[in-house]
Picture 1 (cartoon, rainbow over the protein chains, first blue to last red):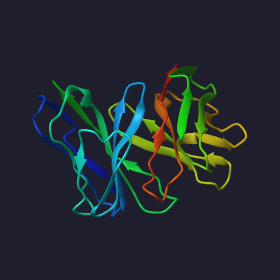
Picture 2: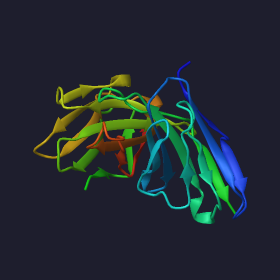
Picture 3: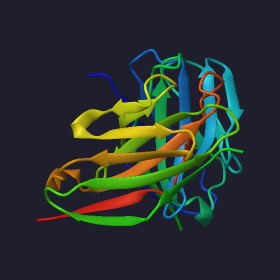
Picture 4: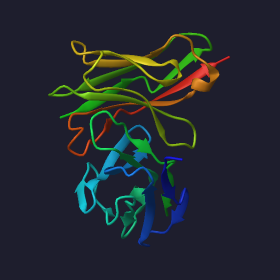
Length: 113
Length: 115
């Protein structure tokens, strides 16, 4: 089944403890992206990648890192999480070209206490 | 700069009634426009997209949207609501679909369907 898989689905952590949210897609998509969803704000892009070793900042990149060493994986790294990073995170991927829409993962609900 | 405004954070309709979810966008160039649906505890699912072809776009589950350049609108409609349509709906726009394709999302509209 074609899908974007995020892990974990739920995570509670403490301020300052480094964590990684994994994202993997099995569709050989070139583009991958991370969004965070907050009430009343919709979804905002954190980082995106147009292909292996090509990443760039989105609208809210502060406090996050990403890497794209393999085409299928695009992990989101929080080096020192803070409570304002408590949010619902989505990974998404799509094929290059204008006729293709993004496929979203099921989300990771992160709570930083 | 691109932006999206969804009028009404909550919309309630009766089963069988018309669904109308409003979306207005701001874009300096011809945009690509999308509607996504999010069911509880799930990711976003693409309902339909406009990419400069036909202005009336048909999507899944009986939804459609019409691109109106003069009104900078892309409202989502469905003639007859079903209980299973209850979800949150997001309108999104992008100008640079082949340069990373960052989607700018509206705030979302939660649709409730009453029996």
